[in-house]
Length: 157
Ligand SMILES: [Zn+2]
Ligand SMILES: [Zn+2]
Image 1 (tube, rainbow, N blue to C red):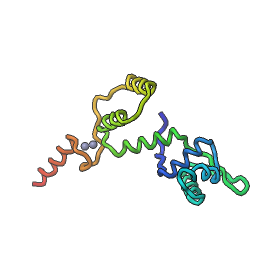
Image 2 (cartoon, protein in one colour):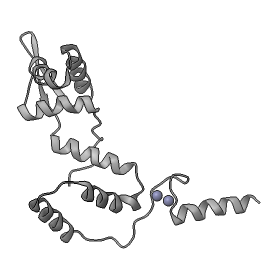
Image 3 (tube, rainbow, N blue to C red):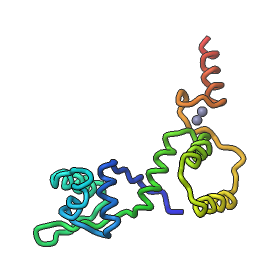
Image 4 (cartoon, rainbow, N blue to C red):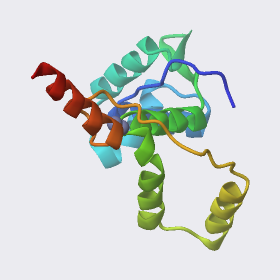
């Protein structure tokens, strides 16, 4: 596992740009615009704005080459996807992660190879005895929180 870093947070539009640059290795505004203008109907100015934001976020490294810039990714696609998944799970109760993953598996289209990979991952996973709720009181209805809020009301009387 990698050390915990700042989460990589990019918008859906920025993600579209990054996918092109990850695929090409590095790219410039014209190339990205040419590829995305057909399907997305994005103008050069839109792409330039998005590239600028990605540079500000430390996701892209610009390098001037004559009159234009060449952009190189500073984060990998895998790390960005992982960060987005961690971000999703940070919005739900730790106790609901298993249920959420199960729903994701149920919804996903999977090949036999994908399913073998999932079974392997499960077989090699060590279960934990218990998962503590990590929610702020009022954000979930687990036993602890329902009980706690009940106690607070009792004490007030
Ligand atoms: Zn919770
Ligand atoms: Zn709770």
